[in-house]
Length: 86
Image (cartoon, rainbow, N blue to C red):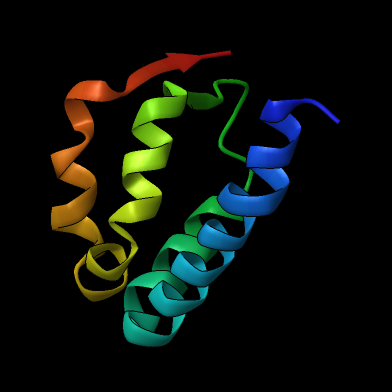
């Protein structure tokens, strides 16, 4: 298994699950709105984000802030994100 695979399976996926579950629990009203919006077809444009591994590592270290205040914490990393569309 490559280093990237180990990082994704060992650190990134568990971090994502913990942060996602905390968001659903702490912000259930916002989650419900987003879930209903994103579960309907949005068309053929699909956004995705490109991040460097070092940014992902910093985000994982910042997990307590993602749990406490996900919006403000995510904004801290916006300069390191590249948004593209398929």
